[in-house]
Length: 341
Image (cartoon, rainbow, N blue to C red; front, side, top):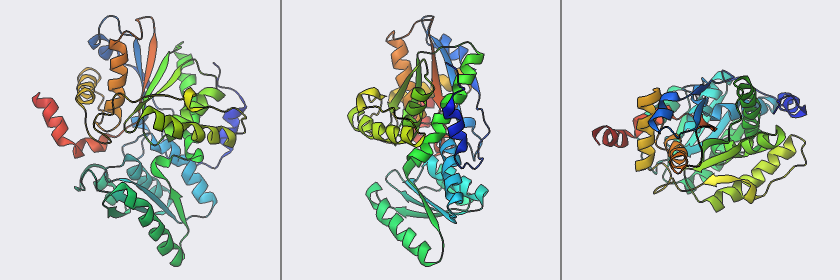
């Protein structure tokens, strides 16, 4: 499963603005394994919460390529969108500050707009924040922002939700090569890589990288919203566009994309009982903090599979920690219930 092939060179040929501390650590969670019982597999955590950009997270890898593209095109302002507690928005604001660009964020208040967590950091990092009521209101407001900025002589660069476009997905194709090098150093051949999936940029990048670098493991997204059918239908074309961007003729269909939708609960950003249990287990065994929007639900998916006997003690699996730490403080009710339960 060597990482030396032509696609590594192609990934390095794209414009890229350094934002992250790479490689992020790959660490074994031995205490967590013991908590899951003597039939648990080896569990390794890829710490992309430690990418380093304003509390880190997975979006930083995508933003290296997106900001590189923006600067190559002469952009002066980054514009992006998300929920009020969007991790992506926070990292976009931080990336803009480092790159010397202005930033406008269009955020919806479906789940509240208290000045805490990511929203507090957005403003601290210097972004102009425009709040709208629902997710459907974001695109019209983005269009207005573009018009205003262009009229003022600025050159706006749109970064879509989660950086989920082929250029952004390159960040996670590159992560696959990085991870393979770490697995080789540990003589590991894991069966599955778990991670939270929503806007499909991370999923598409990992799926593309898995094909190009011929990985030994299944790329397994755990949905934080939507159904498997909806998400795989979105992920397949984005994966194919990412492959094409790297000059590959390989393609995937929705059936080739692996997504578990059994841990969404009542919807996006709504904590689940199993997700909060997973958060408590990992914090108390490994001192690793997860959030209830993304990583808690993803770890709940991993735990469910382990408890169902999907793996044995001779196996290894990897959990990709995609960050989200600041949103802990915007979900205090869920954490209070966990501590009092």
